[in-house]
Length: 128
Image 1 (tube, helix red, strand yellow):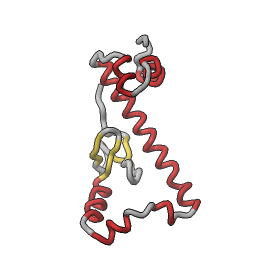
Image 2 (cartoon, helix red, strand yellow):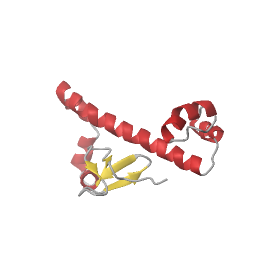
Image 3 (tube, one colour):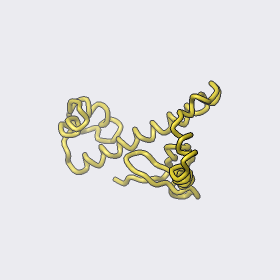
């Protein structure tokens, strides 16, 4: 099983990136960040005024239409994180980690872990 950045988006601006694009992505644990966002964050971090302004919630100054326009980006990022969790469970199952251990780590029963991930990971033959 291979975890890849192919077909991923920046978790911050939703720009598609990764292999085969001009947008490098870095990150881990589901979150990916593009080079432009890294540069923007770095500039903000080293500018006291920009840092102070960044502490405000951006949605406070957004119109309803702007908030609605961002919703699909939020959902795409959430779906990307769910896919990453499935890949991570696939990795654990390839390493013969039990559903009981996966469930315990997630704070759910082995059955709940199996129901959430097995049917989506190709581990359909496994029993809880």
